[in-house]
Image 1 (cartoon, rainbow, N blue to C red):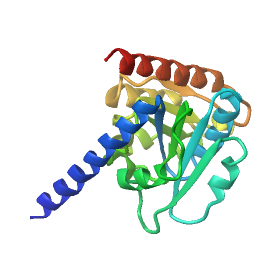
Image 2: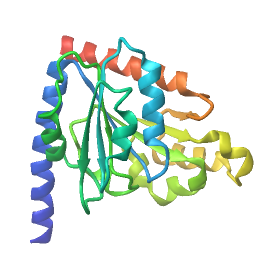
Image 3: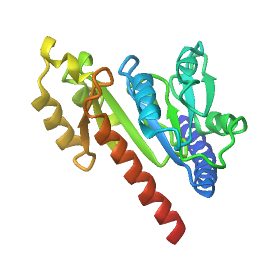
Length: 223
């Protein structure tokens, strides 16, 4: 009986996720789901990303946290639209929560919708939100063993960002261990090193985002 209940919940979530994705594609919006542990730099990455995309690129952000609106407040001056979702005790966002947030957003004219998921290295990976791409962040202060310890997060990622690389020099951090684990768990995902403090690697990330939107927009148009 418990298995049936879980399957029912996931099926209901997936149905809403498909409708979310349909809405994104109809509007020509690339939806990006950012997943990581707390403190890995999701909000800092979004600040850099929104500024780097430039004023002609219109983006919205859905922020997921248990409490407060602090991350949304940080982003409100760089994103055209921001919606905060407070989950209370929930450790991840659901497709239904994203669908409810969309009622407060104007998708027409947007290029990107960034979904900053709740900080957690396990739960967010199990729920489709309707996104087109999943981004897994891993910051150097978290250590070089987290890919092997929490493979679920990285297994489903379309790109993996190693953040806060400016701190490598002061940490006992073995890059080769991280790359070995990623190559074993998810060899298809590109890995990018970046520092939001120095800006190193941000241009490569922005290029990847732009290419992904062009590719997926073309697929929808010709599909």
